[in-house]
Image (cartoon, rainbow, N blue to C red):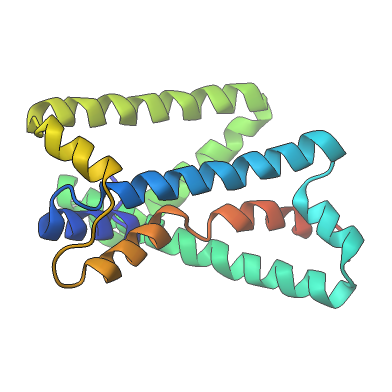
Length: 194
């Protein structure tokens, strides 16, 4: 359980609008898929990732600025994840927050250590974790028993009702299409010479 901006925003929007803003989650997910598929197409067609294209097309100063901004975005995305996981461990198991931070960092290092056994095994582990999260999600969905008509209406009929709905919509969009998408592409700039 990771408590970050996305979770807080989704919980707040649910409390205030129930299912009315599901359409923005659908739109944001489609936008993220579009960005990722365009990046994948770029890599498949040219054989180079976005960072390599930037290195070849832009001057050194621009590449350095892009790299620096990407590093800031990566840290800005990861800090809430680490602290959120530490708070979740504190709430679930009464582990002190500082120990939760250390455990979170260690779990990340363990995942990175799996790379020595091959990328496929790491991918399998991550896929297993994603499927576990999906199974938990569907179990909770079965437990909550939402009204299907309201869910479908919220998913496919865009509307903004209530005070603050526009702000929540913008927050949901920002939380779904996070700056985490772009740093992945620019993170390769660490390994590329300027």
